[in-house]
Length: 233
Image 1 (tube, rainbow, N blue to C red):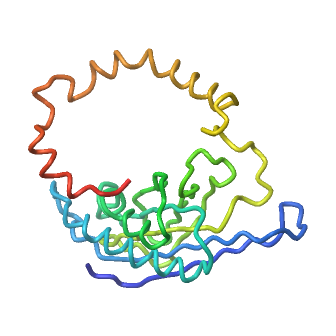
Image 2: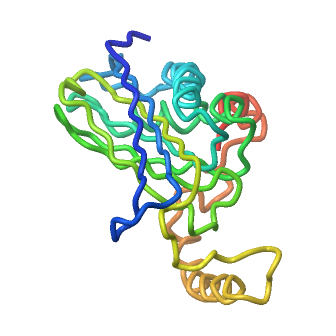
Image 3: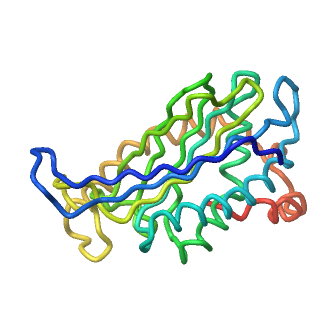
């Protein structure tokens, strides 16, 4: 792993939308700019980037936690791939192994880490999606932090970002979201609506899936051999 530079961003909001003082919200992002070993290369096996993602996850999370200074409430991750690379290069860094060391640094996290990957040129901005680390349905905590580095990514580089915050959006007021503790509220209706919408699609999905026949499915032995590579969510 060859890192050219790192950056730490601290964003603190101290007034609400009308300009009145409020309880501050602090959001932080730790970024690393690294060389993409597969820039301009047609490479099928991206496992080299899995371990890089794990190393970056621990390092960036430690930097972000030091800047935040209080317990982390929301988290998220993102990557910008330079123009000689592909979205899949960023996905290989973020998805398989980056999340586990992040959770270790912040003391856990039951929810999927929201993520965002794109290809971009110098100075490209990206929105790091943030969500509650334990409850993805907690609407008050769904947020974004926009970041950019003026001289990155170069065409053969990738920017990797880890973001945290210490609370909910300022003046959040769109409802608390479905709750397991309150099964009779809107959450049950949402679940029912989603189920009704998805049901007609199941036949099409079964027909169109590349794994629609058993011969296309990976064997149990293959899945077990690969399982140690994927310890993230």
